[in-house]
Image (cartoon, rainbow, N blue to C red; front, side, top):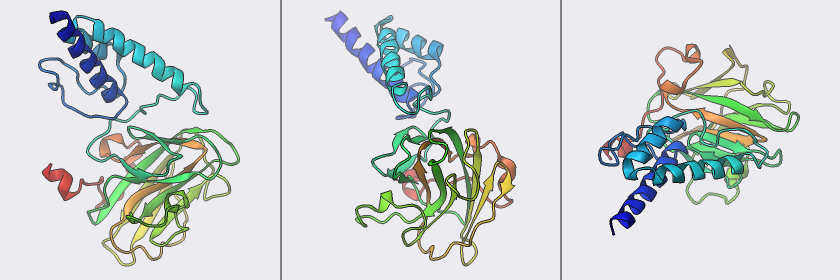
Length: 270
């Protein structure tokens, strides 16, 4: 009986650790009794193994290793070969929200390997403050000519047209995006950092974009009324969505008076 209980607790600990590493859960260090699980989204072998060993003497550690091997095999079998599936960023209160079926999400990493039609993704909350800033880090470009990435904002319309998440930003009302790659405002390369500043303290609202620290010339957005969500459109690329200030790598682009996205009132009260 005792062995069965230990095995069960070990399996639960292993499942929790894998969820933490893949960015599907973010919990403080005391979530498994006195076990020091920590924030394991960066896949640190020693921390995860120690946590699992604390849980049941090693069985969970073996389960974690087996799950990692299967995850690595799956990650290396697609077009985004070699990319850590959970991404480089630790998810916080704001995550990836609604997105097209073609977009794969692990934590704050989004990928759409094919260079076909692509799809949209929205953050999990709208912009609730007057001025907000976030970044997009390009991690992989899978099709040199066909890959494209649009960064901007869009309304989240419940029950809208069924294919709205397959539409590029700017192709539908209350959406705006600046394109990189495939003849857009700039080339799209692995390692690019795109900064986005959204200002709704003025009318009409403005969206300002930086490409590797350089201001991008873009048309003024039109028709952006009501709540706006940070939005992306991906095709043939993988990115990390730096929604929190701790994720930024080009914070010098953030203008004075702008700040990272704030959780909605519902999230703050949870």
